[in-house]
Image (tube, rainbow, N blue to C red; front, top):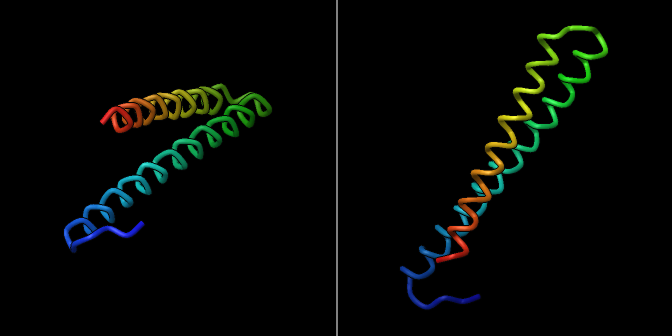
Length: 79
């Protein structure tokens, strides 16, 4: 896509960077959720209730962040 004028190219670049930053956040959230599942599994296997609870907490935090990203995406699409 070719945009006329220097200012338009700058705006296009800025929007592209915002999309990439959102993707980074989503990947990080998925990683946090996966880490939580691993902690939970290790806690169950070793009988460490604290580690298991920490895994649950990490998964809940990841889910909450994902929900926030979905809300932001919905507002972006509504523009």
